[in-house]
Length: 519
Image 1 (cartoon, rainbow, N blue to C red):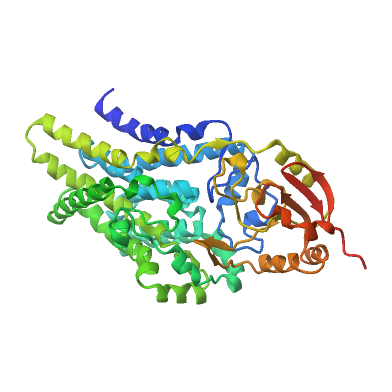
Image 2 (cartoon, helix red, strand yellow):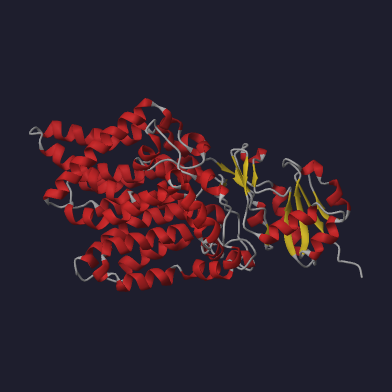
């Protein structure tokens, strides 16, 4: 295999090294990553028309449409492998102005970094799709910036790919604006608004309740990693709020040393770009977006009061709560600086063997210091199958004549079912069954409750605590109740069950109809 062909194969090698155990039959269910056999396209919440804040708009709608022709298990594998391959291939394209060794090394850092590892484990797959689209967007927007003729789809398609969720849509728009520059951004701004309209419109429909609990600022603040403090964590593309999804290798001294070496290489690359050369224009174009990403990521940690005011009083301000998401804006710039720095350092070595040895080490070092991204994030991500009872319960719900929405109990957002090997996941029942559902959007972080934004969810919680839960649930428009018998708290629902009519009973699930209100 020639060197160029080997370079093109490298993104596939990395993607398969990460995703191999996820390719087994079944679904990978981890925190917010929930795929089901078929997401019902007729559900109002899929389109952001439910009572909950539309955080999964339009990603749920895209999945529901895709499920018309592609089963959920296959769609998830295509999304996961495809995102990593597309991220690597895009980085290779973005860095092709550099020599092959530096190009591959920069690509490795773009794919194999804490941001990708942490967002993969926490299940933010729309963010990973957007991340994969960023280098392709950079390539096209650099051509727009230079005044070159570029086919419209080369920048429209990656820009649309970033718009699967509100936060990723903002990331794509900021990056496109930064790279195109103020003078040539007109068309791009119009298209950026257009592709983000689904969640913008859905958000405006919830504008009255679009404010968030300010307690979430502290809960979601960027955390120190690798012994480098918060700023060091951000500059190494880490620092996610949930410590449980951070690779164990990030606590080792090797991670600290690697980050210092990485920054030295980037500084060399920045100096080379300052003097001119192939990195100069990309660095100038990407620097504003990187600054925005870094500032937003650090707001909750260093200026919490300001961010608390924003999320409490500005509709949609909660988009900034998990600021570490916006570190994606640093990644293209860092990949270019790594490639530029290695080009300079390798160029000072006269012997070809020495030069390629340095580049080889640079290519493999990110993998060596964070090996627990490999093989399903060190075994954290494994495919499992939904129990047979779930499909039986789905059929019972589909056959029910009861009107109203679905409620899943116990009324909590996350589960750790034994059939998922005890791994924490957002309750899949909210998407699995063919009815719009009301879910509890309160979030417990380190023992503290961050209040949700769904007023109807709060009303349902009050109904469950009332003297006649069945009548109160019917008044709230609930027609069916599913109890997950293996979930924590299921044995405390006797009062609620007393007024309901069972239509399906199993070891793990029980489906009830809420009887109509008697006159």
